[in-house]
Picture (tube, helix red, strand yellow):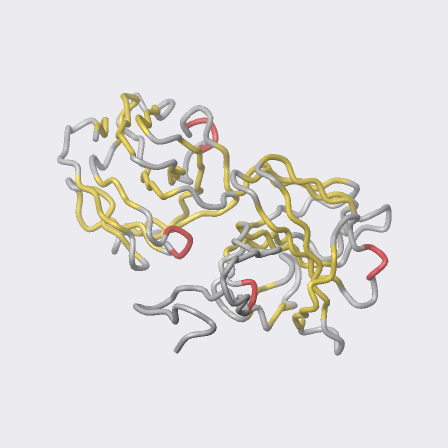
Length: 304
């Protein structure tokens, strides 16, 4: 591991399994916090002030490298070339200083197995603070934007980690009963803007799930099919049916028509589904599929 910094501080690697991590090996007590979306990643801890030199390491699997950029500066201009904003951010805690906590927006880029190398930009003046996280490649959204609206409400992306999530950035409305959507990314916009089109990029194949208001089912995007599931919201008595469609990695474009949409948009990494199973055997026994979540599993359907 190479972690370019102004003080050539020692480099450590720590797996993220909590809500906070020590920021630098040569500076106490600064921490990065609010790390829910980075659980399981590897954090590369080094110099408090990164340089414009190489940040490099080898990986044995495809990964997503996520850099957390100091939000007090022009973080988009300073992020490494090729890294795209995810729409998420984490906290940086000065631990006791005035205005102790501020946000570090996240930028991400995929790397194949082998050497991962990049450089921060405009870090020549000993004022470059950034965190580097490495995670086995998982879902990341970028270039999230909508059109067909006169509003300018910023879009937000939040990982679903509980049973409830705020529906809109300009209202206190909530979506609830989200058990089947845990781990997905929720795209939050302004409730009254009603865009006709929503687009974003994904780095892995995904299933997009839209929760439609029961009053606007005619606006379900083309190609989406009902899942048979519903979620609830805090402003309507009726539940919101879920519709889903699979997309390959790359650009996702959703068309809701000229009247816009009243929907919740969830994006989840595509999960494994088996179908049309043929399992030849001497007795043509029934076939079952079971997910492995323990230390043992029943071997056959016709033998106990």
